[in-house]
Image (cartoon, rainbow over all chains, first blue to last red; front, side, top):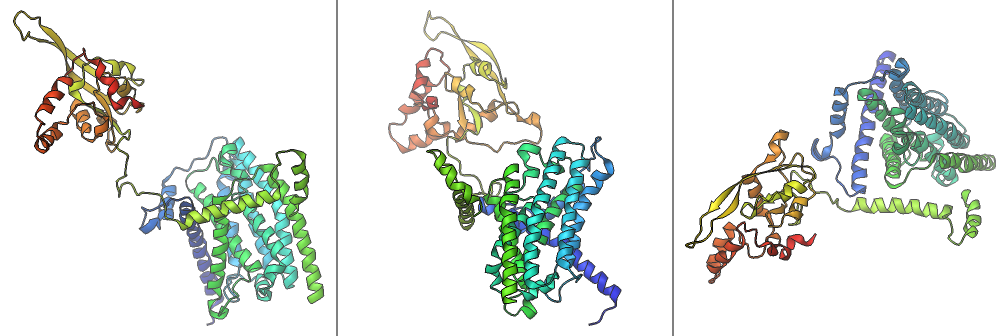
Length: 320
Length: 218
């Protein structure tokens, strides 16, 4: 099964792009339906059987809409922002392994790579906030920036704990080194990582940057048409990436019965569970105030993550 | 776990204890549990265009006109906050029925239109009508493609009377269709339409009839 290198690269790129375009839609559709039923509604029912094509219809609607650039906007920054928000998740998706063999770009230190790349996405939000020429956008963008600075630290610390336990920075290596009792050993780190991931995605309860009652729609206020759709897509692509990353780091990725053949299925299943949990939080919980949000990061998450790191260090020295 | 350190102190501060970290976690858990429980149950939604809604008979859907009760007194048109009722009438003379009697005049309704593109469904016209000529009907599906077609005239306003619940109708009034059916069902019926007839003609001298009607409840 030896393919020429160029063919292999193109094939992998196409597969990753296909996954990047379908998985966020699947998450979005799941959110529509799960949220509706959790609120006693049915959700979209008209576009296809049980509204299965609702997001396709939405996409067609977005394409038809006028793409307005405000006169006060910093034109190029404004136009470029949606792409900057979206592309990093595509790159991150390529480096996350679905099984030992199913990884598009198996770079060394892929954990570092994925974390670094996903952090670039926030620049899109900041650019949107700054470039829109709108005070609400600016405030929202600054909130998003502050949120990222606060939550990146506990997230990286929690990820570092797993890397320390596995003795490698490669995601494939981490998932292979994982065993079931890490679920307990790395539990505080896992919780910190999950909370920080939700905060970084600016999802409820950490959606102060787009708090509609305060800043309209934050950095995305001035966007319409495809630009707006790209930001939405980036949000759901972010959920996909973070769920997969959480699965690989804390849930053992593709480990499970018959993982040799069913590996990717296990990854997908676990990641789906994590994604649904992230969606569930949005439906069940209220929004956290801006100061509470910062307090949670610095007073709770960072200390817990540091304790977890120490715990992992002790564990590695004692058992390793 | 770490926030709990501040919890007990703030609880002792006042008699009404402020919620601590544990209450917070409990509340978050409750939110998750409630949404999960709702997820497990069937939805409350009814898919409207595919299944008709099951409305209570007293629903405020549209304003129906009982034309024979209208005296063209203009009270509804004057009280309407959005000025959407249009009434035209003329006077006709009733010749004396007995010899040496005096001829009387009465109003004949020429035009009674309600512009439902302006109507805000406040129901003041129905409340204010002393002659029980206006009613709430539960009909609601009368949308039009052109806003001008929402100006409905007497005949259309009259058709909505069919769905006005019996309990809302004035005492003694018998529907045109129901009168025949009832006559067949009960023996002393012939007297009934006769009794209903004098009550309903536009007779300004009998405004006492209205307080007894259930329409006044609200």
